[in-house]
Amino acid sequence: MLRYVIRRLLGAIPLLVGVSVLSFVFMQLAPGGPDALFARNARMSPEQIANIRHNMGLDRPMHEQLLVWLGNLLQGDLGISYTQYRPVTTVIWDVFPNTVILITAGLLLSLVVSLVFGVLAARRQYGFFDNVTSFVSYFGLAMPVFWFGLMLQLLFAVKLGWLPSANMHSIGEDGFWDLLKHLALPAFTIAIGSIAGWSRYVRSSTLEVLGQDYVRTARAKGLREQRVVWGHVLKNALIPFVTVVSIDIPLYLTGAVLTETVYAWPGMGRLFFDSLAVRDYPVLMGTLVLGAVLIVLGNLVADILYGLLDPRIKY
Amino acid sequence: MSVDSTSESRSTPPLASSIGSASAVAEVEPGGLAALVRDPSARAPRSPLQLALLRLRRAKLAIAGMVVISLLALGAIFADYIAPYGADEQDLFNITQPVTREHWLGTDELGRDELSRLLYGGRISLLVGVSAALLSTVVGLLVGAIAGYYGGWIDQLLMRFVDLMLAFPAIFLLLIVFSMRGSSVLMVVLFLGFFGWMWLARIIRGEFLSLKAREFVEAAHAIGVPGRRIIVRHLLPNVIAPIIVTTTLNTAYYMLAEATLSFLGFGVPPGTPTWGNMLTSARSNYVTYPILAIAPGLTLTIAVLAINFVGDGLRDAFDPRAGR
Image 1 (cartoon, rainbow over the protein chains, first blue to last red):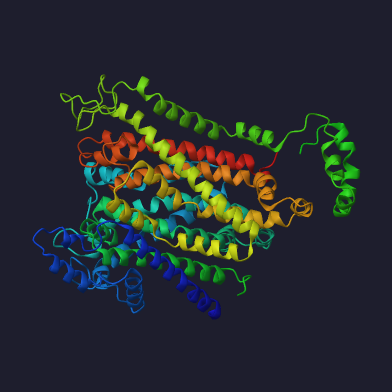
Image 2 (image 1 turned 90 degrees about the horizontal axis):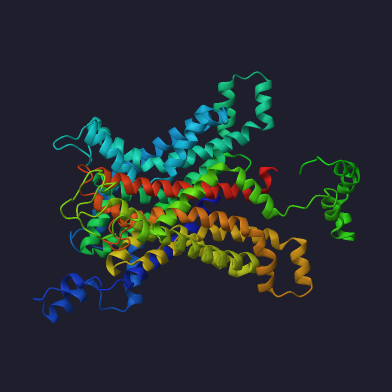
């Protein structure tokens, strides 16, 4: 097991290097370049611009810049933000926890709801509850995330006034309850797509497990139905589910960007847009790399969980 | 297969006994077993495609989806004749109208008729969805087929590339490039297609790997059919089902993606009527005029829903395990 984890971690390194190199190349394709911010200033003399370019390391050949950047990256140094004049790691670290809160809340909500809905729907296949959940699921999958967010905002924040419409805290308050109230709509928004998809998935894999011999055995030996369903069936239905969840992790990153935009949530998404507007290259690169790290780690965790859940798998 | 004709039930015993040594029979007399299976049902044999169509017809949801999406597509194509107003025609005396007899879905902040814009907007939205889906299918098919058929280091190389693309936080990159280069319909299509082919490639590769070991491919190989011809004539027809299903579902996915990019301000250039752009411009005043946000969002949702129904129907129709 440990050897497997180590091997996977080592395997992730070339992947991350690849993503970093690709990010770097794509950034170079953009016109203007990192010094555009200064070069467009008419009062700058050519010497001054050359000076800035030299300080930023932009006068060196491309491959050298790439190697320097990669070398720094390996040491956890993402460079200095062009506009905030602070290390990129600090800039990102300031808002990263907020995004983690949002994504975690969405993931938890989605896991709980889709497991309960999926199993209940499978218990009575083609029953009333099954039909209702499948109808809702189809809608959930077809809606644009941000539109769903806007509609929730319109209904619960504007028309009904039950929940705050934006931001993470009310002004002058930072209690947990206040955070929870602000979190409710964004978490539901980011979760809706996976609630819809996952509950369908849990339903079909539960149905498959319900037909297995060991379920009949469990029932035959007189276990209570609750035990059978939530113990035997769910446990086995969960195994392939882990993979599905890990596949959807990139979707959560995208969802976070959209949700943060709709609800003015102060996270990575907002940082990204702010940096985009002022072309803060180091921050943008940092966001790209961090996103890739999250995706790769998510897949790794899923694979390890898969092994833990299914004792038949040997490494 | 249904057992309804008497001739079929009479022929069952020899069939059953021959199954025991099916491999031996098949080797000695290729096609003999197949002939035995097909022959008894004296009625016209149904090809897999016919069976698929039959099952598809049974799926009412898929048919309903097909009808809805056809209507939306027709509305978009013939918008010039159907739409009550032009896409950019302004009625400056009636801006942000509620639902009225002149404007069935009201007007936006520039006095443009919402219904007309919805009809015209379908053009770009559907066009982007379909062409991005086709593009990603072509790329996925090429990569998957080459990796699966040739195997070896080519396979390794291509699959590592697939891993790389899957690990890429595509949304960030799309936004960076579009914000700096500006965007156009073509750019949106190219980028969406280029970042969405990986799953199909994996499916095709897996199918090809298992198909490659089958006798008919070996036979083709043995009589000297060149590789490219084996791929096109012998392998491709066997993966038509996943290709069609994936392309259909991708179309819906890309329509959503187009709207998402537009919403973030980096999609199809603003001003062009697309469902995504209409949502974006509605965002500034949707609290006061909710219809402006509800109408395009609902239209998009219904379109995506319809395509998803068609895709699921196709999947059931092609699934040999689905019975009958």
